[in-house]
Amino acid sequence: MKAPRIFLSYTRSHRKEVSEIHKRLRKERFDPFIDLELAGGEEWERKINNEIREADRFLVCLTADSAASVDMGKEIELARELLKQGFKATGFIVPARLEDCKLPDALSGYQAVELYATGGWNALRKALPEPPPVDPTWRRLAGAIAVVLVLIVAALAWWNQLSEPDRFRWSRVTGRFTAPRVGLTFWQLRQSTPEDPEAVRVGKGLVEPKAGNISDFLTAESVKAETRFRIGAKIRLGFESTRDGFLYILDHEHRKNGPGTRRLIYPTGRSIGRGNRISRGDLVGLPDDQAAIPYWEAERKDADYVGETLTFLLLPEKMAELDQLSSRDDQPIIEGELAAKIARLQQASSGRAELVYSGGGGSAETPGEAEARRRSRLLGLADPSQQTLYKANVGSKDPIVVSVPLNIIQ
Image 1 (cartoon, rainbow, N blue to C red):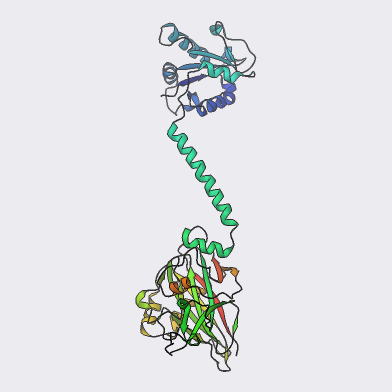
Image 2 (image 1 turned 90 degrees about the vertical axis):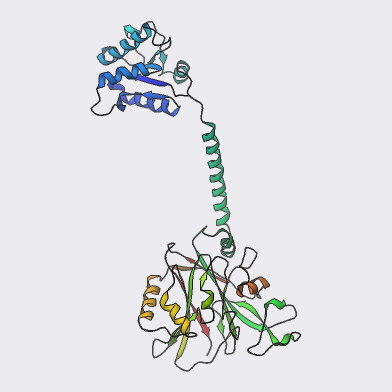
């Protein structure tokens, strides 16, 4: 169904009021014409005459100065001629007074619509043809969009009331719902107890544990990130990210009398074959599951030792120099231009990883976490969050860099 074409005849002194009528008619699905639509260079009189002939209604917007308008008089005369010759039906001419004024002599026999009075617009609508109905497809689409918007608002409200650990767990499922997070958990191994599931127990050192002897086994228990480990403490580390990327982990020893040694501890010569690309739900355990001894043991250092820092680099692309190092040696030293390159990367990313949660520790590793550490499965919504969480305020192609101290009491 075509929208009724409405020609608007008016005097220039009331252009503003008529422009508002034009806007309202268009909003109500009519096809109004006003001479403001004429393009530069068009033959004005011929175009006006053609528009009057093509119109379904000729709407005369009357004011006190209408009778003095020559152009308006010509337009009214043409409309009356079309009506007289039978080209237009009764009701084609619709006089509408914008203010209290006399009708021009040419329209003296017509009933005018009082647009300035209460109910004037409803009276005008009755004098015009019915516009086409709203397309039911668009109506359904608008309804669907409204439902989606309501759901989005509800989802955002629900998300905002979640704790950081819950957001981290849900991000394993929802993916890029929010700024990327990375999670770390420090584990300290203790003597296993009969209550610990067999799936989470590990043997002590290089000794082959006896299946029935509980004293041959250790169980990992989470500790605070700021824990100061004593000499002999058996330590393990877990890393997880809600964003995909290539993971590199560096250990930097600090010395009183020099910069100290920086080593690459992941990927290693053992793990490089599997690749170091991680995705949502991947859990990287250190030492990796192929290590002969499944934990690090805190050692006494020399008097020059100050401490050490673990740095996690999650990069959008592989770093070939680090890959070459890891394939040649186990925990190779990083030095020279490569060390300078990594230092520049750390400096550029400084302050962009924000600590948003630090847990209290004390939870034993679950069978699900043990399976994920061995790369047998991905972590899901039902699995615990990592113990310490950082929000990365970075772009989708930027590296994520997180540095944490490893505290060993000397």
